[in-house]
Structure formats: C-alpha cells, structure tokens
Length: 381
Ligand SMILES: [Zn+2]
Image (cartoon, rainbow, N blue to C red; front, side, top):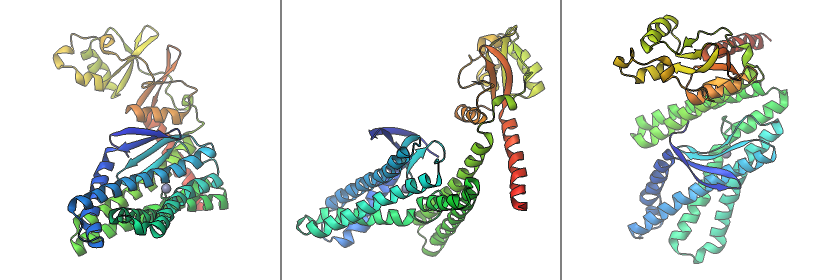
C-alpha cells in the first residue's frame, strides 16, 4: 500500500510516518486553496498572502489527520491492540494495527474515536472563529474557517458505512455483535465497501466525461479503486489469519526435501537441479549439516562464464530469518516471512538440521481448498 516512507516524529509513543505520496497531496491542497478557494472568498489580498494561507491550510489539514488517527490509536491501545504507528499517504491517514480488534465493542470504540476527534477540531475551529475571530486579520480567519470546514468534510466522508472506512468499521462491529461471527460481518461490510468503491470509480469516469475535469475525475477514480482494493484485501487477510493461525508449519512442510551438496559447480546445479525440479531455492548441505541455501535469484547475478568455476558452497546464502522457519512456528508467521523477503520457499530447521521445506504454493493450496469448502458450506446453510 505504501511506497517510500519515513518517520517524522513520535507522538504518545506512536511513530508518525509520512509516505512520499502525501507531499503530492500537500502541494495540490496548498495550490488549490491559494488559487481556487481563498481568492473568491477573501478578495484583494496579495498572491503571497493567498499562498501563505494555502500552505497553512495544508499544514492544518496534516495536523487534523494526524489527530484523527491518534484518536483511533489511543483507543486501540486502551483495548490492548498492538499498533504499528500512523502513516499519512495519498488518500489520508491510517493507524496501522497488527491483527483484528479483540471484540466488537473494541472495534466500535476504536472506529468512533477518529471521527469524534475530527468533530471536536471542526467545532472548536468554528466556535473560536465565530467568538473571537472578528478581530483577527482576514487571512487567519480564512484558514481557521477552512479547518472547521475540512474537518467536518473528513467526518462526513468517514462515516459512510463502506468498510474499511470508519463508518464501515462501525457497521462491522454491529454485525459482529449481532451474530458473533467476525468472518460473516467482515464479508458483508467488505462487500458494501467494495461496492461503494465501484460507485466512486463510476462517478470519477462520469466527472471526466461530463465536465472534462480530468484531475477531479482521476481523484475519485483512484479513491474508488483504493477503497475497493482495501475492502477486498481486508477480507482476504482476515480469512488467511483465521485459517492459517494456530496451524504449525510441520503440517504443511515436505519432510524429505531435495538438497544440494556444497562441492558441485553452478553449472551442475543448474543442469541437474534447477532444470530438473524447477525450484527457486535449494538447501545446501555438507554431509548432513545444513550450510545455507542457494536461490535462482543469486544464480542470475553471476556471469555465465563463472558457472563452471564457482561452486555452490561459495555462493550459498547463510541461514537467517529471511529463509528459515521452525516446524513448530505458526503458518501465518511463515507467510509473513515469505511476504517480507519475497520468497516462495522457506527451509524448515531444527537447530542446524534441515527437517523440511515449506512452500507458498502448499500454504495457499490449503487456504483456497478450505475457503472453497467452507464458503460452500456457508451458502448451503
Ligand atoms: Zn478514521
């Protein structure tokens, strides 16, 4: 979901990160405010003043979004949810949780907290502007009025019951409480979220056709696409977690894997192993001791004339967290490890002994079978 991002600062122990795409938004917002929003409302100010107002408005929006996410994060922490921090990106902010909320009640309060903060900021800006604003310089009045407006817009968009927007999370918590079935509640809310995403995509297309405003149309189109993807992914992730969590790696591993002796040449490896078995990773052994592994990715880095000169032992990577797992580890942990390292095979090790190979194909095969059989059962019932 994110490209390159970096940490700005910590707030209440949460890392506040910013994705590079956020800068694009900040520049667009400042530009739009300085050229389209403020000039017609507050006439006859210098361009420099409009731009200062635009930049302050974008900064205020940034602070508003951080505080909204902080609302989610603080309540989530109270309910014992582990938080990975807050990230701002192209479409706003996310308070990243590892795992699902422990209960429907927790989900409800975590979801409500963000919009509650935005309502508070919006009303505070509105109230302060009304009560004390008359004596302030016009540009300050303008920025405060904009912040009152944008925070209420933020609330209006977020309370739409389209999962994973906040309103969709509230809907899920209610469905979850009602039938005590998180999977069902997520499936229904994710379908509504995904459907709403399609509506936004269609709206974006109609804006481009009707008004020829490519930028506005693209914006709605992209938000729709993002929302649809996020809804579907949330459901898939929940299914994956429910099906794979608690299943030991031992259940899925192949316990007599093909191994490669360290002394053979790369050419022998390619001809006798890679082209024969079509695996992307082979454990490298010295007798019955595991030395590490060799991958097709590593072979590709070598010039062809090295193939006869180098041995497998010389180019093997050591065993570490990126290529190994133990038989008692959780299958979900193995999947996370494969995901992080972009690997489709892990060596299953017990100390320095190789006991098996775990493949992504087997994990996903089990997953899709189970989904297929259980969803069918759900439909019949
Ligand atoms: Zn929110």
